[in-house]
Image (cartoon, rainbow, N blue to C red):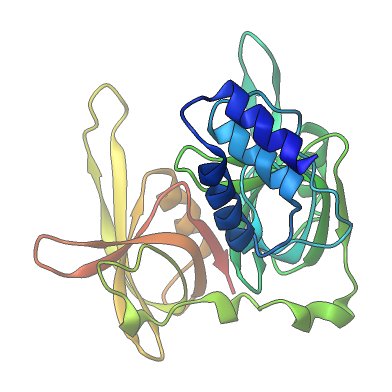
Length: 278
C-alpha cells in the first residue's frame, strides 16, 4: 500500500519525485513521534500537495499527546485536565445554526484548544464540566484554527468521560501551568498567571469607530515574584468587576503579554482570556 500511495502522489503531482516524497515521509515520522503509520502520513503529505486523498483516520485506542496532534486526523482520543471553559455561543447563518463552546485542555505537553458542538455544549450549560476536572475526550477530529494552530473538535459521535479523582496527579494542576510574573518579557506571548489583586487603578471609556464606546480597566496583579499591570478590555471589564476586589486571588489563562511605548510589560485580558477566582 505504501508504494502504491507514493506512485499515486507522483502520478498526480509531476513536480515531485520519489526521493522528495520519502524525505517528506521521514520528516513526518519524526514530527509525529512514530504514532502514525506510513500510509496515514503519506495521505497527509498528499493532501498538502493537493492530491485528492481518502479520509485520514487515527486508528489507535491509545491517547495521543497534544504535541503530536495536527490537522486532518479523525477518531482521535486525548486526555488531560480542563484548564478553562469559555461561555457557550450560538451561531446562525444561511447554511446552519447551532451552539459551540471552547475549552482549554492541559496535558503533560501543553495546552490544547477543544471545541464542543451542539448537544455536547449541554455538559457545560448543566455544570457537569468544570475547570480542574480530569477528562477523556474520545472520537474527536482535528483542524487548524485561523492562526494555524491545531485544535480538537467533538461532534455527535464523540464522547466525554470524567475520570476518578484518584488520577488527578497524572496531569499538571492549574497552578503548575502558570508563569511567574518576574519572568514576563515582550516575547512571552500568551501566558497563564496566578496572583492577588494588589490595587484597582480605575477604568475609562473610549470611542470606537462605528461601534458603541469601549471601556478599559487597569489593575495590579502580584505573586511571590513580583507584580504587573493588567489591562482588561470591553466585555471583560464587566466580568472581572463582578469577580474581584483588592486581595482577590485571580487565575488568568491565555493572556497576551505586550510592551508599552515606555518599554513596560503589561498583561492584557480580552475575549480570548479565561478569568477564574481561586
